Image (tube, rainbow, N blue to C red; front, side, top):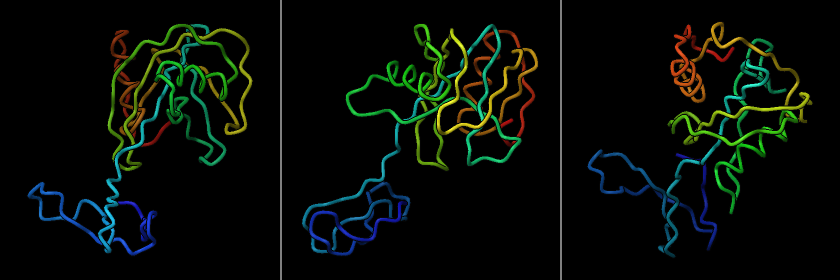
Length: 174
């Protein structure tokens, strides 16, 4: 559950309410003055790209991550944007590459971050130019590429399997 404490409409405190799912746990927060506000805390849609560049998988490292973590290019779906447009925008913004038509790999839950990931394969061209959020990248032969047991790692695993590669699975991006 998010850390909302007050109603954004009237300022009253929020109180836990049951959503009728029979789980016995409070699954929503609602205005204590009953102004009608209910915070549903729905997952945030995120797009991710298995970027294929020069026949290799591009994995990127965010500035905030440990030196050994590399993962897929990903970002939030913006209002009035299709997932396909969003994933191409993220690839341009984060690694400076132009992408061809995105192909959906799958949709993956990422409960720890309260996100739902729409993952695409994008073949790219151009020269890599890292955006503000990234500090490094690496290109990995698909046959040598591993995947991780969380978030975008499942999408990379599925894409590699489609190509006949069974990736080594790890607990951390890499």
